[in-house]
Image 1: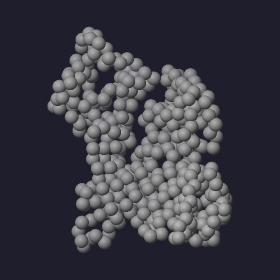
Image 2 (image 1 turned 90 degrees about the vertical axis):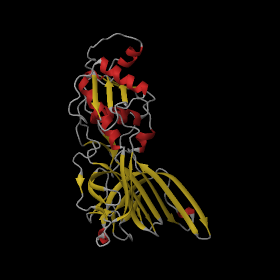
Image 3 (image 1 turned 120 degrees about the horizontal axis):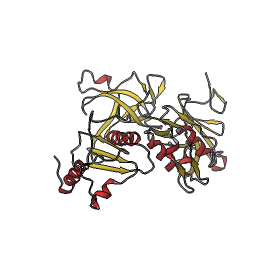
Image 4 (image 1 turned 30 degrees about the horizontal axis):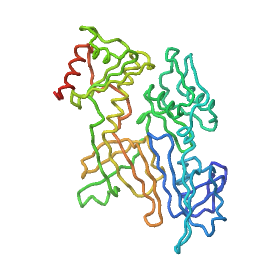
Length: 396
């Protein structure tokens, strides 16, 4: 039984339909190797495909051709051919093509039409307008989380020459969301873990030799780091209070301005403080959300569990996907909890078959929330005490 591809072709004669690469509407299979990487934190995923040819003149694929990659009849990448290389030896003649999602044009592009917005606007409308006015009309913006709208007071201005990705990343960060892509080449606004699909299959490695037959982990590793985490995150919207203090301004015991957000991570020593000054951010509520976002993102990147499993499928019919939940029990690495899939790397070659490498983070890594239930009022004297602790290298 065959299936229809995005271009409308009905594939019923391609050997090994579990891996199909469609280039400008023509379906190919039987490759020496295929690799695709997908990530929740990446706006443009990458692919590489290697196959054999008799003569290069018979090779019908060109730079810029449309590419759709399907695993088990599921589209996992929609983009372009960006590189072609070929080589031959006594063992044969091979050709390798590689490229990225359609969203690569956002990564590489720059603003040539300045954008000024004075009224209220959703993030989806903002990004759609940004892309369409700068020549990108074939990428849909899909909003899965509906973050707070930008008000008139946000004063959105995008200057000519600014990188498109820089603009997308900046305004997504202001609303504590991620910009990523899906298997159809769309720009997706989401939050990790929000309405994520949970797989029934488990990632399993049991040390008991009598139960080891249930294991599906080929190899695994775990990392933990705190070098990019802080005890206190201070986000200020307009005034740079720290610079005033170092200049000798006398503010006594006054409460810091309301256009500020503070959040604590009690797992980190008190001597570590991060101050972010964002003059265009807005009010105190948004500043606090930005502080929560910084703490959450940095916490997520401090823990990582990576493993490899055989094949591309989970739950028998679904292709492994970023922003999905799966329970991990790995007795050798002391992991037993539900984790969120951040990165997925698919690889196939004629010697080892299909292998999927997964990188997982904590389930709530991308969900902004206070890490301390009550941080009270932050006074200038309290801030000075924290600065003093940093200067003397204290870690109380």
